[in-house]
Length: 136
Image (cartoon, rainbow, N blue to C red; front, side, top):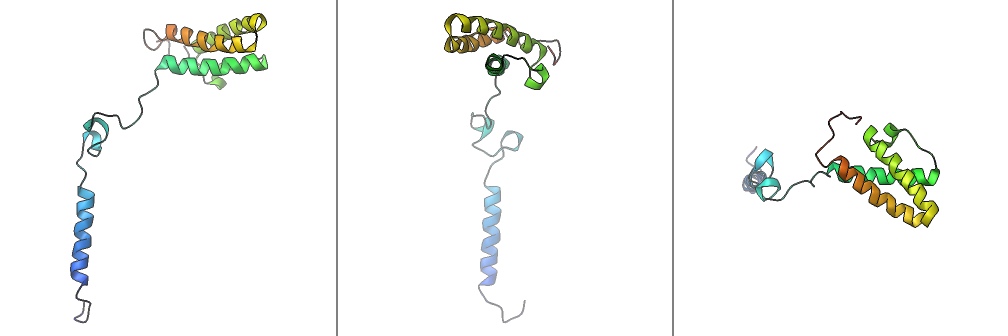
């Protein structure tokens, strides 16, 4: 820098560097590098908790059960994202829903699907995840 430079450049540059250093150093590091006030440091999770397997099972079985009921045809369990055990639940739920639809109509069948899928999936996962591998 020559002698003809603006006299304010030095203090402005120093202030900018100081501000940048303070801004990047303000957050205290919490567990796993989280900033203070997030995650475990504040007692609140930084991401939503995982969906329990019985809830996930009930949602996906109910979804596909309604599709099967509407189309009157089954698909491949793998293309539906179901395990073999979940597919067995789906077939049982659909069979019951078809009978209910004949007896009491479409709305009653859909309500049965939601209820039956929830009950059967809760029973399946009551002791944790099945241990037969990803296909069970």
